[in-house]
Amino acid sequence: MPIRSVPAWATTAILALCGMVVALQQTLVIPLLPDFPVILDVSAEDSSWLVTATLLSAAIFTPVISRMADMYGKRKMLLLALAVMTLGSLVAAIGGTFGALIAGRAMQGFASSLIPVGISVLRDELPKEKVASAVALMSATLGIGSALGMPMSGLLYNAFGWESLFWVSAGLGLVFLVGVLLLVKESTITTPGRFDISGALVLSVILTAALLAVTKGASWGWNSPLTLGLFALALALLAGWIPLQLRVNQPMVDLRTAVKRPVLLTNVASFFLCVAMFVNMLVTTQQLQIPTQTGYGFGLSVLVAGLAMVPSGLAMVFLSPVAGAMLNRWGGKPTMVFGAAIMALTYVARVFLDDAVWQVIVGATLVNVGVAFSYAAMPTLIMSAVPITETASANGVNALIRSLGTSAASALTGLILANLVVEHNGVGLPSIDALHLSFWLAALAAAIGIGIALFIPSGGRTPKAENNVEETMVHGRVIMSTTSGIQRPAIVTFVREDGVPGDWARTDNEGLFTAALPGPGRYLVVANAAGRVPKSQLVLFSGGTTEHNVELRDTLSLSGVVATGEVAVTGALVSLSAGAGDFVAATHTDERGGYTLDLPPVGTYVLTAASPHSGTAASVKLILRARTERVDIELPA
Image (cartoon, rainbow, N blue to C red; front, side):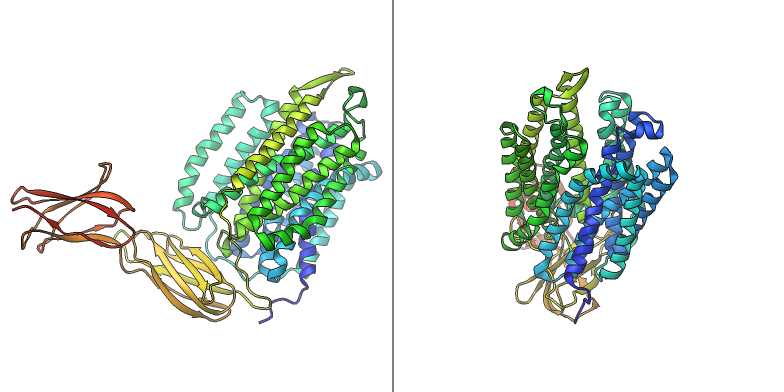
C-alpha cells in the first residue's frame, strides 16, 4: 500500500532546515550581548538572561513536546513548536523592551523540540535505506546553524539594527511552517493515552532549578545560598519525581526504558560528547579574537572570527552522507566511537598546534568532523533500543541530556577562562594556559565518551517497513488475574516469521500496549511478566490498525508436598529464606500436605518445613531458576 506522495528529499530538506533554525536560535543574540546593556538600558548581568531564557525553555519544553508528539501526532507538534517560535520572534521584534525580549527569547526555545520530533518523523516516513543519511543530515544542521548564526547576526545588526535578527527569525519560521504543512505528512504511529501533566510540571521545576544553578552559579557564587538552594531543590524534587514516574500509568519519561543498558549508556556518552563539542564553539572564537599583543591571540573581529567557524559547520553537512553510510554498514556504536576518537585526538593536537589562524580553523573543523559522526549515531542508537511508538520522546530525553552537557561545558569552560587570565591594557583576557586546559578538558570528555560507548550493546537496529508498505499498528492488552488488583508491567515482543525483528512494547498499569510492526504478515508474539509463565504464539496481522490481546494465566511458583513417610502433614509451616539467611516467604500446608509459594528471583535458597504435631523439621537447599519448581519435603518420623 503506498504511503507517501511527497518525495523523500523534500521531507528531509524541510526538516533539516528546521533543525538549522534551532541552532540559529541558540546563537542569535550572542554577538550582541556586549551591546544590549546600552540598547535596553540594563546591566550586563540582566542582558545574559536573553541566552538563559532560551536555554531554560528549550530544556523544559523539548521533552514535553516530544512526548506529546508520540501521543498526539508528530506533525502537529512540529507545527506547534514552529508557531510558538515564530510568535516569540515577533514579540521580540515588536515589543522593543527588555521584558518583551525575554518573553520572545523564551518562546524561541520551543524550537529545540524540532530536532527530536523531526528525527522521529524521518524514521516513520522515509524509505528504509534513506533514514540513516537523513538523520545524519538533520544532526549536522546543528553545526551549520551554529556556524552561520554569529556572523549572520553581526551582519544584520550592523546593516539593519538589532530588531532585524528577530524579523528574519520570524520570516524563517513562517516559511518553515508552510513547508511542514505542504511536505510533511502526519505519522500514523501514535500512542493513545493521557498526558502526564504532574510529571511534566515537576520535571520542569527540576530542570529550571538545576539549569539556573549551573548557568548562574559563576555570577551568583557557587557557594551562595541561592545557588545551593536551587541545587537542593532540584535533588529533592528529583527524589520524589522518580517514584512518581514509576507509578503513573503513562509517565512523562519511561524510566524503565531509560535505564535499559543501550539507552542509558547512549545518553551518558552523549552528555560527555556534548561537553567536548561545545568547548570547540566556546573557545575557538575567543582564541581568534584575543589581541595579537598577547603573543598567542590573532586579533580578529567578532564578524571575522564567526566567519572562520563556517568551514567547521559546512564540514558537518558535507560529511552527513558518509556518516549515514557508516551507520547503515556498521551501526551506531562504531560510528559514535569513530567520531569521538576524532574529537579526542584533534583536541590533543590543538594544544600543540595553535601558531597560525589556519591551524585553529583546521582544528575546529576536524572537531566538527568528529561531531558529525557522533551526533548522527546518537538518535540512531536511541531509536534502535526503544519501542517505535516512543522514538520522539526518547530522542527528546536524549536532546535534554545533550543540552545538559552543553550547559556543563559552558559552566566549566567559563570558570577556566575567567580564572586563568592575563592582563592586557587593564583588561583580563583568557591565558594560553586557560585555552590549553579547556582543550585537555574536551579531550578528556571525548575519551570518557569513547569508554562508555564501547559498552553499548552492538547489533540493535530500528525495525522499519519496506518501501511503499504501511506499518501495522497493534493495540492490545495483556490480561493477568491478580488478587491484589495491581497489574504488573509486561513486555510484548514481535518477531516476523522470517526472523526480522518487529517491535516491542511495555504495558501500562492497566495492561494496555501499542506496537508498530514493519508491515503485515505472521509474527511470533511473546508476552512476559515477572512471576508469570511467558506465552508465545504465531499471529497473522493484516495491514492498518488491529487489536490483539494476550492472557498470562499461569504463575511461576514453588510448590510441593510435606509428608512423613506416606502420611501428608497438615498445617506444617513452610518457610523460604535466601542463601544469605534473609526471610523470603512462608505459608502452611493444606489438608493434603500441599503448599504453594510465589517463585522468588533466580538464586540459592533454603526451604524448610516444620510439623506442629511431631515437632520435627527438615530443610532443603535449592537453586531456583525462572521456571515453576516442585519440591517435596520428607519430615522425620
